[in-house]
Amino acid sequence: MDEVDGQREEHTGAVVATQRRRRQERALRRRDALLSAAADLLGEGGFAAATHRAVARRAGIPLAATTYYFAGRDELLAQAFALLVERELADMRRSLADLRDQSPEVLADTLAMVYAVDRPRQLGLWELYLQAGRDPALQDVARAWTDGCDEIVASVLERAGYPCGRSEVRFLTTVLSGLWLEDIVEARPEGRERARNVVARALAAIS
Image (cartoon, one colour):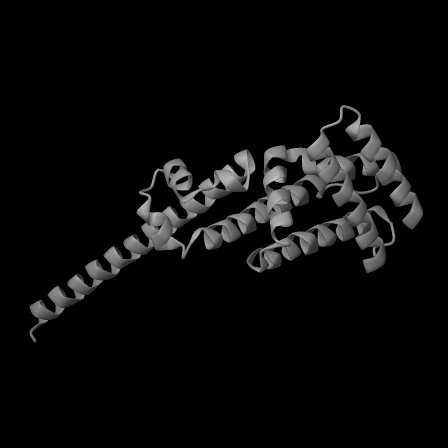
């Protein structure tokens, strides 16, 4: 093989590698678009809203792509649930990142309402969380949500000077979870004040 042939082959190999990389990047973008669409639909309309057809339409991708990238609707929903949890935990961390050296009243108010960043997403999350009781494929994601909330609350308690052992953290996150679920379902006008009072009592109990 002369030098020209070698250069031509090297160039062809580089072109093929570039084309392969672009196909892979396109595939990842389409898969991410489908997941994001499924997560949005779960937040807007719940479990029943995230059909293959609706997800493909929202993502602007052909319907056949949903079964190309995901083995079935169960896999799509499980991964969309994981994306919802990832978004929720990220928002909680941002909302609570600077929470330190606050009065018990401010701390209670902030913890009680931190979930309210995105109520539709919370509805989708809780619907899938309850569905995990019937679907083992969702349980790992449900546990990751619980563990992530525990980690965030533990960090907040530590920075605020409260005991932050496992029992204190579990006590407070269990109280918070009950309050969050009650409020997103019932949407009572006095929900924020009720929640703040309960969280303040919980903080007093562990201090």
